[in-house]
Amino acid sequence: MDIHILLPLLSIIVAIALGAASPGPSFVLVARTAIAAGRPAGLAAAFGMGIGGAVFAGLALLGLIALLAQVGWLYLGLKVAGGLYLCWLAARLWRGAKQPLAVAADGATDGATGRGILRAFSVGLLTQLSNPKTAVVYAGIFAALLPAAPPPWLAILLPPAVFLVECGWYALVAIAFSAGRPRALYLNAKHWIDRAAGGVMALLGIRLVIEGVRG
Image 1: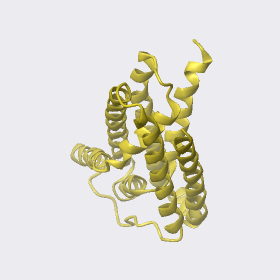
Image 2 (image 1 turned 30 degrees about the vertical axis):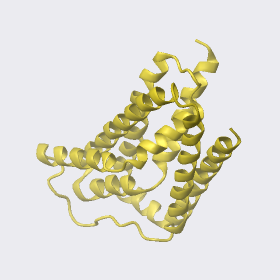
Image 3 (image 1 turned 45 degrees about the vertical axis):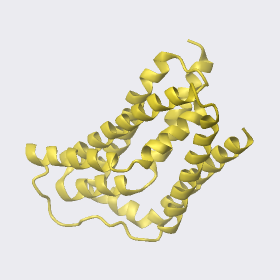
Image 4 (image 1 turned 90 degrees about the vertical axis):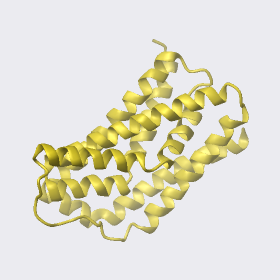
């Protein structure tokens, strides 16, 4: 297989991984679930996040391919839109870096039961699907990094790849925050971690905007 065909897929995975690792509402939800309801519920929420990400990726990809076949300027417009959103997200992360993480510190709930796990999964899925800006980000990343005529296998692999990235990251968050010491370490270093994540998102957003404007 030609390495030049694999590079877009690898680049997209890295870009989405950076976005998933940026603390935000989804991060707070999974962390809170893991702390308050335990590791099984946290992992269920992570699975819901992954499913929601794959759904948005599939919708963005199908719509993008269909529209780009007829509207050439949309390719550049999505770059600018995606880049501007990433810059806005970076600004939010930077401004909120000093704010304490709002997670529950009370005792465990029924998160280890079947009902608790199903509820955690549902909340994770709905939280991901309730944010349509995720689809805009995916569309911007796809527009920036996919070739103009991607092979069918690449389009088929993208939603499962997004699922693995999203679910894998939030599973790590659930595992980490269901333990005591990692949670304390993040809370102590939250200011610097959030600022670093904001800087990475800003750089990626600026790059997309510049590429879109230059055409």
